[in-house]
Image (cartoon, rainbow, N blue to C red; front, side):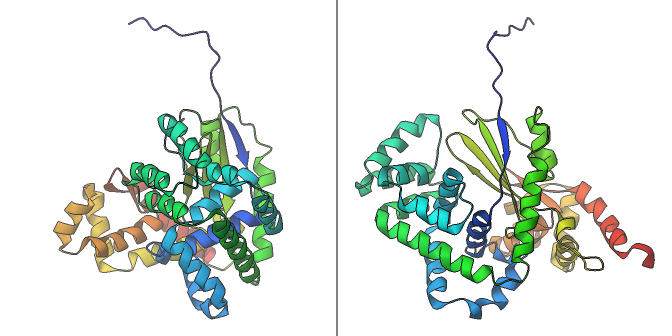
Length: 347
């Protein structure tokens, strides 16, 4: 077979590593309002034990975000602003005109749908247009409802909610004694990796994030890598018209003191400390399976099974691809070494 190559230059992507207290605030709000997954977050116990210290108005805002999924809009706005403080974020938001606002917060679908997305942004007062666009996301877990809620609120209502919510969450979370250390560590992470050679972007992305495999996408010119503490252990992935964002968990060694077990070690033992989860893992080591097959095999509801799988997935003992769950043998084999490494010379 003869292969013919065009003489056009190869398209490349640029990599940016970006951290800020604004991202930590937004991801904290996002994680807290992810009720179905919240039990898998490292900070779930801290959030639960400190609910009494949250003001009633903050809890009201969080309930509203949970119901509407408007946290997604905060991410898209900060991607545009790259604000370094809550004050800066609020100022830039208040200076946006409605057309710019909706063009920013309406999620990207694909290149064919871009004209429609931009048209809706310009005609944001026509609520029916949001419903039409939302219908293209009906198979998505939350974006369809998010778009519908964008159309049910006024521009000013959303801006006021965002500014008040961000301010109140920041006031609450910065009371944590480790907050300043987190921010300094994230700043160090950004400075460390921004000096890397980025001529091999796919390898560099995997190196920085600790395992994210990036596959080039049409129209993506920039990949932003955002280190985070508050959304651990998950990596959150978001796409805009021209940018891919990966919010990756900060490395464990930055966050633990000598003699203190890592959250990864604790999470792994919790995941293994249940008979049902061990049986599920045993089955997945033998053979990859779908949620439906596992539900039938173990005679438990899909809701209960999904809860068990999410704990194994949070510990990274299993992976899921297109609805098929399989064991992560590399992670399983390395876990006992983590325990030995922690215990050190005492064994």
